[in-house]
Image (cartoon, rainbow, N blue to C red; front, side):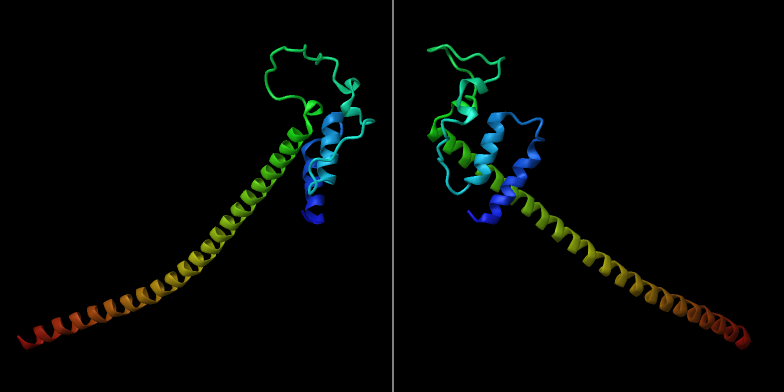
Length: 158
């Protein structure tokens, strides 16, 4: 991916969470994602706090071996392949969202153009209607005058 899209991805990630809301795992994933967009599968260093058991919140005890696991695994417990898949999915979702935004913008622009065209057409038609109405009034007056003359002429003949 281009370096410009890395900055866009980092900005999008930064907008998702405020610093107070981000856990260490989310912050590490966000940083890794924003720095490694084109190179998925970057290994975490052993000194990374998200790979230690101390980073696990105290309210989430470690699952017992052989216990049934419900729902997705926490990010710090993902294998490298699962992390790559997750990063690809995140990127695909962001690209899909970007395409949706662009598509909606194109639709909005097209509708705005149609509004402008129809407004212009409406103004033109109003002006044409005014001209036709003036001509109609003029012809109606002329017709009334001719009828009055015809009536006077028919009275004067008899």
